[in-house]
Image (cartoon, rainbow, N blue to C red; front, side, top):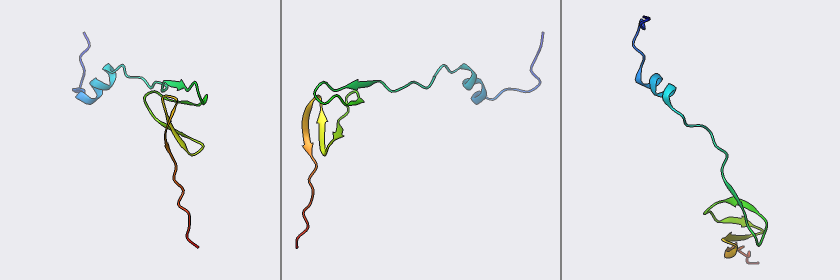
Length: 66
């Protein structure tokens, strides 16, 4: 029976045993705007922040005093 010459580190052992893989993020398409975004996240579109198809916030542009 073969025996290892040196002890393998726990890090190397755990790297071999892992089953984590890179996954593509799951995207949702908003019904009102048609924009794709991450689930449970608000997103900006044309200066407005949308969440669940509703405008949550509008971007405030500061006007310069003349």
